[in-house]
Amino acid sequence: MAKRSAPEVNAGSMADIAFLLLIFFLVTTTIEKDSGINRKLPPIEENEEDVVIKQKNIFTVLLNGKDQLLVEDELMELKDLRAAAVEFLDNNGDQSCTYCKGAKDPSSSDNPDKAIISLKNERETSYAAYISVQNELVAAYNVLRNKRALELGSEKGFLDTNFVQMQKNYKDVRFVGNKTKLKEVIDQIKVEYPQKLSEVQ
Amino acid sequence: MSKFKKKTDGGIPAISTASLPDIVFMLLFFFMVATVMRENSLKIKNALPVANQVEKLDKKNPVSYIYMGKPSSGYEKFGTESRIQLNDQFAELSEVGAFISAERAALREELIPFLTVALKVDKEANMGIVGDVKQELRKVNALKINYTTGVGDAMTNMN
Image 1 (cartoon, rainbow over the protein chains, first blue to last red):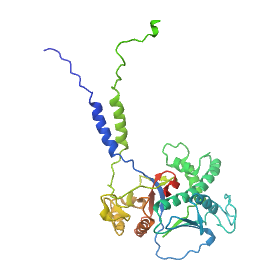
Image 2: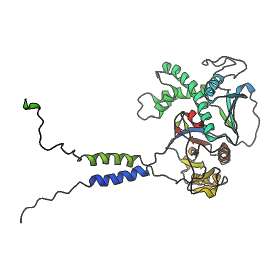
Image 3: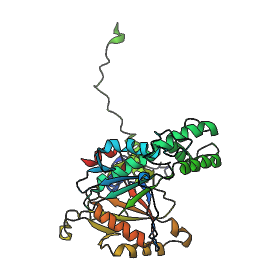
Image 4: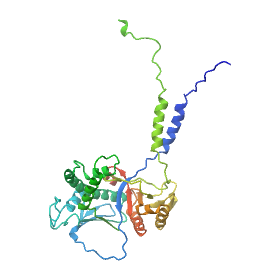
């Protein structure tokens, strides 16, 4: 028997096959969006007892059917909303908040714990506008929390990490620092600047 | 002198395409890994708004999706007003509660309180329908919601 070497398989069409598969996956791929603004809806309470909240502790944001923004009964541009909300939350009217840097205006909110942002919308309001406003209000809380995180962080050994970064670190499995301590700092900041955002129907 | 003389033996050599399959395979694997087959085929327009204060949706916890938007082309018979889509079909507002119950029934008991409802709402929808759905969710005590958005500058939503 004559010894025959195995014939070489022609791999020239390999690229074609791979291209075919590639194009299939290219066409079918939709990269799912999985980020968003988390919110908690208020539960429906059976016994509706009116909690008395001082008018000065409520920051009313109304978004009307024409997507116009009314903040405390005055027209406002969306870009100014963040600063206005920060000013309101950080006001510290009764001076009980030691970490606030606000104007201490007695006619505005007492302290961040009492300050409530109330967001109203009408049925005709567009969803895009609503999300933009939600985004700005969350941003206002984040501005304050970030500021506080930078102060607290330097005391507790988390230098130069703001609140958003801290939360990211906490969720990151590869984070090398002390997670229980980090959690404490995060929780403390959440208590100091609680997110009190009510969505009125 | 003849060092710099061009060797004239038959023009430009052909570029080797031997590594082409490797490159293509690399791309192929990327897309294979990145692909998520759509759970539901959408019958509505669903261009999400953008925001920049977003948090990642925690995939460890169960997530139910509710879609809202105008019926897309081919489904014009359902009108031009924004509609709700649950799973693969259009739904009425009254079906939202039942949908959440069904989603809960499919879960292990200890995970039920962690069920997040992701609202994927078209940016042209109006808040009326979103408010109604939110009210329905409150009735069935599904209070954790997430407004799913893209990542970008929120100021660009309005125009």
